[in-house]
Structure formats: structure tokens, C-alpha cells
Image 1 (tube, rainbow over the protein chains, first blue to last red):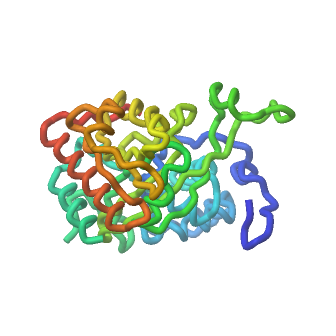
Image 2 (cartoon, chains in turn blue, orange):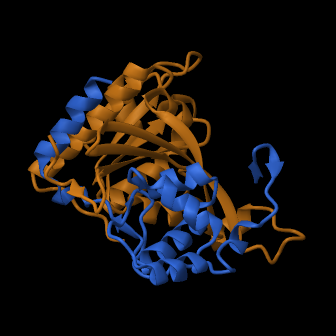
Length: 122
Length: 203
């Protein structure tokens, strides 16, 4: 794995402290992540910051405007599995919201016709 | 105009509705070419638990303790508006990658199965997979310059496709051609949903 032409020193799962499964509900590769709004008190903010690593913070910057899980993984050049675990950390602390894709059977077809029209204009 | 499905966040951005489309097919059939002709493509790495079948295929001598493998997917994004984004995922179609497909298929609108007439059998596992889980798919025959052309009906019967599955000829290098394939898929999915024959794949 390379960053800026140099070998990355840290193995991917070292960033997750060896964890291989995210906490909480499954996180889809096309789920959209947004930064949760609201202000934290100083003490709470300091406490949360002390629990986060630099990748968590880069991740938060990536999600403004909201970005998909796949976008975050390619932007940070990290494997999907690692990204899911770190995003779950942020979700657990109430810092991000993760919206799963709507199963298309539940989409109204007007939206999909809009998609077809937009694609035709590509 | 915001779509009904988009929702406001705590800050000034709204969360777009994500439409997920899969691009499947054998090795070297043109998946990367198709995804990159309609979107900016980036490699997406996954580290997957190795399934038993793949450990029989992948050479593990000397690294017997290795239980995960890195699989690269093509990832493309087409931003239709601030409220609507189409994500394309091009992944290996071989049967030994089906464990990845189960997760990718969840919530997907449908799939493009790419075929090459010189190696038609390479797309059979992908067609099998989508027929089984009930997801809408279209077959796009990538017309390589040195490949023999066959009539559509000959290809349909060689692929044993049911009548309602669209089959198109395409040139994955051409943006307009790749775009037409995606439009055909979305229209096919709309038809399936309208007629009540859309099955949401189980996770």
C-alpha cells in the first residue's frame, strides 16, 4: 500500500487495533455518511477527540459534503473492511449518520425514471 | 428540487439518495472500460475472508495462515444532482467471488452482465447468480474488433436467456454506448418494479 509514493508504514488492521468487524448494524458499501450536526460541550468533545485517531479525523473531513462508504475508502486509500470499522466508531460516538441505500423495490418509479433521463443526458 | 428521498442533515448538506448498480462479467471482458467511460473510476480495495473454494484456487503454499485476500473492485460515481448519485461497482464475476456479491447485491437496483462472444461461458456464473437472487439484469455484449458478430437471437439462445432479459451490443470504450447500457438497465428495473416482479435480494 502506498501513500504519496512511499510505503505506508502501518498495516491496515493496525488502524483498527486488530478489530476485523465493525460494531453495530452492517454498513453498506453504497451507504451515505454525513457528519452529524449539533454542538458538543467542551468536556465531551475533548473526551471524544482523545479516543479518535488521525484516520477518524480524515474520515470526518471526507464526509462533508456527505459521501458514500466507497468514496471514503478510495479517498483515504484504505480497504473497505477497515473503513467500515472506523466509521462504526464514529457512529457509536454520534459523530456521523450512516444512511443505507433504499432497496429499489421500495423506490418510487418516478425517481428511477428521473435517473434514466439524467443518464441519457450524459 | 430535492427528491422525496433525500434528507436534511444537521449541517447545511442534504444526504443524497444512492442508487447502486453492479457491473459483472468474466476477466478482461471490459468491466473497467465500461465503468470508466461513463464515470471517474477509482480502485476500491477490500480485504475479504477467503472462502474455501478460493483457497483451493489461490496458491497458499508458505502462507497457510493467510485467511484474508485483497480483492480490487472498480468503483465509479455519476452525480446526477446534489440529491441523487449513481454508484457503479465492477467486480470479478467468477463463482469464487459470490460471497462478495451477496453483500454488494443488497440494495442494488440491478446489474449489467458483460459478455465477450469469444469467451461466452465466462459470463454464465454471473447470469446464474442474478437469475437466482431475482435481481434485474441486462446482458451487454462487448463488441471487440476482432470478435465474430452473431445475430442477437443466436446469442440469446446460447446464453439461454429468458425473453424479458434485455440483451444489447455495446462498445464499452464509447461513453454513449455504455450510457445506453445503463439506461436499458434502469428502464428494465422500472418495468420489473411496475409489474410487481421486483424481488429485493435478502442480505
